[in-house]
Length: 378
Ligand code: SF4
Image 1 (cartoon, rainbow, N blue to C red):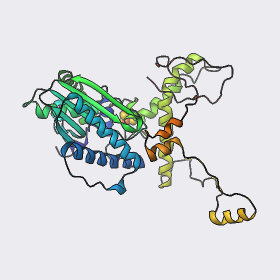
Image 2: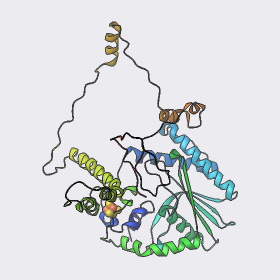
Image 3: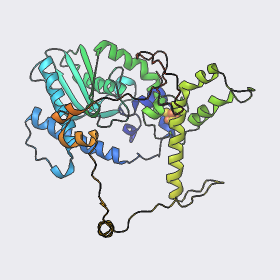
Image 4: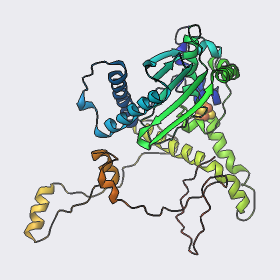
């Protein structure tokens, strides 16, 4: 079946498992390109080189002009974490780097495949580990029940089941820029059962289901239709319908009922605004709306000439400013002794669900009107 490999990807599995209709709805929508995506691609190339050099003995000539210092620090952490895993489980695993694995036959849709960053296999211990490098730091990703890693592991089970008996599967997500190394273990029997459980939804999605189910996965999974999806828009608008006819102000209970839904609605609204603004600049007309010029701002036309004029007036024209902690980390790495000279300051309190593990903050008498509303759902 030509083209079928593009339909159910491992990296997009969080979306299609939760919303089978997304496969059909996103057909024809091209991959979003962004500086972050480009950085991620470059960093994966570097990660591949680092593992090939260290674990497979390949001779690597690093194209240094493609990578920045932050990427090298991130990849050094990634490589070191893989080495620590080998130290823990056992020497000389079978190593696959940037390996294509086919998992489709185990979920009822033969031909589906994905490319795993790193797979380590210890046949004598009956252990397989899939390690996924995430260079992004916008969304923290956990290994527990991570369908991408589980699908890669399924592919390995399918590949080696006749030659070795795998009992333990380790799913590992390494997000070095967040200092986040997440690990989760599942038995091969449980993994095969999970494959059976998702088979109906995989077949439904592959066959062009119309079932659209909005949820966290729309944004966390970067669904390509999240800006134009009618189901997501309907869900966002419906959140307020219950409150339309209520006389008087909303009660704390009504606000509390809306709070868990607001982050998703906010993400949807902001994404839609950006999407419409970008398309308007490309010539798309939205009925009743138009593009207007942005507010003009002033800036120096010739900084060195300005400096000369001000110096002649006895005014010091230049200011010096210390670089930020983040900039310093990018330049000298996070372990540099200079970071002993940091202190932590109190952040603004955040409004979160009661189930959050943090202790309740006791507010002082004054209420800051600009409260932090960047809470997250459970
Ligand atoms: S935006 Fe959400 S509901 Fe719409 S297709 Fe994507 S995953 Fe499904």
